[in-house]
Image (cartoon, rainbow, N blue to C red; front, side):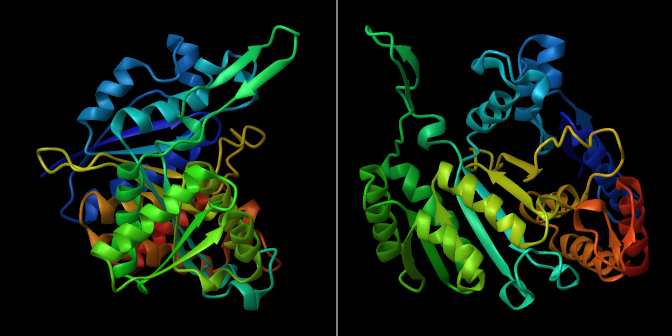
Length: 367
């Protein structure tokens, strides 16, 4: 059965890292009983340049039809002077909202070969394997009222609203608890309940779901400022972390650096199943568009490649294929291949395309 994957390369290095992942996709079509069909669309700055919108209707229509979406990156200084409503990032926020992609799953795994690439000591991060579950369609990014206004005395005031409803908290909590059941049965919910009423409600509602549906899961709570400190102090104390949109945005980038580079961290954004049993899903690397290195063939494609591995696992239930791809990446890193962002003394410095070559070679050896 064919599966339609929509490719949204976006801006900056997006096209370079997506191109290497498409090579991996083609390898599976050639070597396994998969039939992935790809189509392309525009999002972000490149979409604005073509259509005047960071999320054209044609892209949205294609997204609704696709079985899964692979996205590269959006944004860059070229578009920073645009009105806020049409900046590239609005395209990404818009597609998440339109498809109902409320659950962002971001694993942070420290590959043994990269334990010395982190800025933290080896003993702190060696063997790290945690998952951050971030609520993706609520919070200050979407809450109203919002905007900037000029008061009668000429003072300008900016307003953003942190808001959650109990059903929004319940569904993201269930995602975290379900993940924890397949791992170490431990969830840490991150909030700021001591000063923010909306997150006090968050804490109470997470407790309700745990008590009613997941009594076998150990649940703890942590204020976001302490959580940020603990991620760099003792990250292996965590297993699954669940939090709101803005806290998750910050903490997941912090966790990315534990692995050695933002170029190593994949993610999956998932929605609720529709009436036909289909789960809308978008997969993307956590890193940005990196315009300073775009077009130079030096970006790290591993986060995007690992995002495809997550697609294999979550959207297509191809666990063995996902395991194979993740093992190939592990072997490549163990062999010393390094893009510039994870380069270490004694490593073999390679380009974006050469890293793609190395992963394909490793897949050929494993098949």
